Amino acid sequence: MDQNHWFLSKGEYTPLLQRYAITEEDYLAALNEVTTLFLRESSLEYFHAASAEQGSLSHFDLLPYPNQRLPYNPVPILLNIRGVGILSQLLYLGLALRDFKKAFGVTKALRDVTSEDNYRGALFEIEVGAQLARSGLNPLLSRDVSRLPHCGPPVRH
Image (cartoon, rainbow, N blue to C red; front, side, top):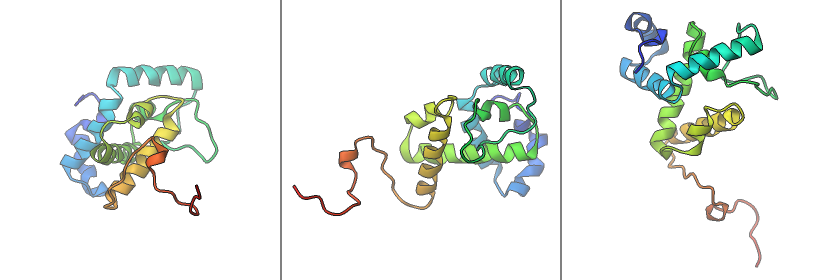
């Protein structure tokens, strides 16, 4: 894990563990998921480029407002801004990534979450998959719709 991120410094995160009701092991594992996908150097470069292009970087959220298309991927930006509100979003993402990977392995969604164009769809897929897995269901991820159960009225052949 890259110790250059402020949130990986033991002195910074120790007081937050109780606030977030999370163990140190789960905290570090979740943030490792994020920092493994979004490497320090490339996220810092992305942050600087977005700062130059967007101007003020005073308010960034993992999820934009409804019907808002983001002209950037917020994760590299969140990784380079300090704040407890920022950290809670990174923890949310890291826990979702961890639970999604446990249930489905490495999928296209894990690659797409790092892109600008596919970020929203990939994040939605990761969130839903993680929630299904956490609920105790054994979800199946399939691109072959012919294998999916039919949910409408019976089809007559």
